[in-house]
Amino acid sequence: MIGQERLRVDPVCRSAATLERLSSLIDWQPVAGQLAPSSLCQGRARAPPLSMFKPLLQAIWNDLFDE
Image (cartoon, rainbow, N blue to C red):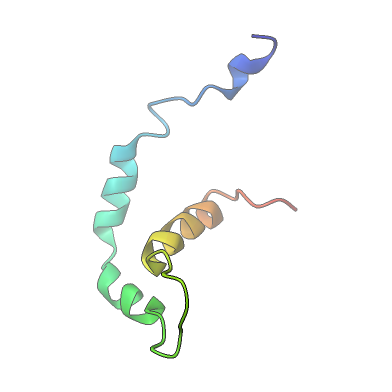
C-alpha cells in the first residue's frame, strides 16, 4: 500500500458503541415527527427521513463538509 495506511480507521475512536450511546441520549420521536413527510408528497417511496437525518447530523458534528 503506497501511503494508504493513513486511511485506516482507528476502531477505538470510531466505534459503533459510541454512536449508539449518543443515539440513546436523544429522544428521536419528536424529531421523527417533524421530519415526517407530508401527506401531499406522492411518487416513489422514500427512505425514512430519520435515517437520512442522523448521518447529516453526524457529518455536521464531525465537520465532514467540504469548504
